[in-house]
Length: 330
Image (cartoon, helix red, strand yellow):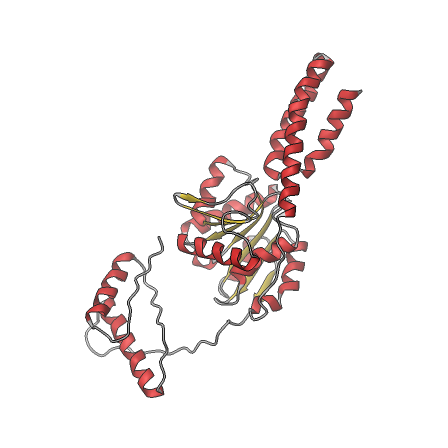
């Protein structure tokens, strides 16, 4: 009777364990139950006790993670905050949700906080992917700062050669490649109860592989929530891929943006560094016309060689009060 009661206690406690522990513990318990008829009661009791201790330790870690959830506040100026209730309702009601919004809407930093407020991240981490290593690190630092916690505890990040996540990490930032690599050792991704695939419109090879993999995985894991964020393009394709998942639009930017287009040059086609230089000269001309400085200029380029070539050309111009800062994704 004592053995049967212990088995019942373990079975009823499994749902309060970490997701990554539930299946291994469940399998061990089933093996012991199958052998129970031919195993002496005392031996079975000794075999069950370590299993019960592991269940207790896993539940204790869940409780510790629950207590570690910080107080959550939202910057009211971000457009995504205005749609917070609609987003939370959609996440609670659907397994897959598509969030469409422009850069600057705040979706990257606020979505993990919305998930925490819904009780996600306790039995498994909230995994949050970024296309680049630099973004994974800086977004983790920003979320940790807004939550008032240290990067590397409640909020962590993993990129190549660096992993600051731990057993107490609630939100984990990582590159798409890191999450894809984890599927080799953990095909069910049981370390996570929520996954946010950010900037999915970039459609890199890693992202496309992940979207195909996660479509199959969500059919097997009903407990897994999947949130896909994209710019306001191709959202219908993402929704159709996940059987008509709901799409929530988050419009607006944190700051107004004015679009200015330059006409094509009449002279022979310029090399990329010369085009960047011409564009910057055009900015300086606009500054003189409007008698105000536009301050910083951000140039997006496709690789390190282009960045170095453009930086070298701009430095050779010896502009006054201008500092050229090359920044690489790695």
